[in-house]
Image 1 (cartoon, helix red, strand yellow):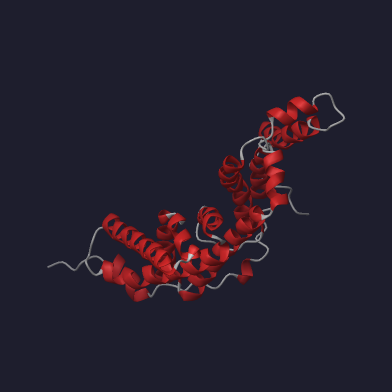
Image 2 (image 1 turned 90 degrees about the horizontal axis):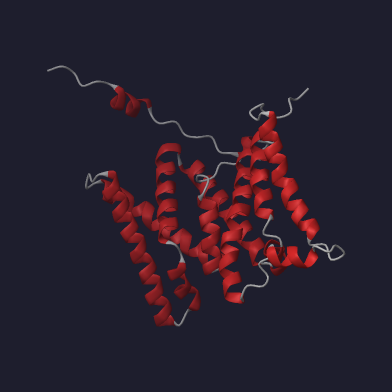
Length: 266
């Protein structure tokens, strides 16, 4: 018989997790129009009264915990490897600024350029912090070039690339390049594609008015999302699709020996 959970949670902790779901449900019940609490709860626990501009900004905040749930679901329940725990979420926020299709095209171009220049930067034998800073500056130049091209061609899609967070592009480009070196091309491509796919799913859902309005009307769901993350990690860490992850290429023994072997005594 399968054990229920990993056994990491004590009785008190399980009670806390239960309250993460019960609390939001009570707040949502208090908004029911037939109850005398409906007016107060709706006014106190809703974001629909905000201006359209403020709602647009708040949506980015609301998408982060939901994105975290999706990332944990893909990584732990499905077992699909991604480019770290936060990059899909950051990328999804970027896509909400730039648009999904334009964002994907620009992301692909930026990562390609970062991968191409990384060996050239490493050839200068710079410290890690200097290498990353050079790549960060290069990404900024890519964004500036896209902005200038957008203004020159009258392309709004290119101009919106200026809203793409530079740090996101740098993290993804550097992460992809490192994975390419350490694990091989199949693993690197798989992880970046899956990371982008999760980001697209998050951004696509929050572009839908009906889905977005659920969180604007019931922001208390963010508390339940924390509970969902804990439940998945404790009870649903099944990794059902791990076999679909490409086999990680092993580093050559020659390189390992070169790293580990002490220098011969003179």
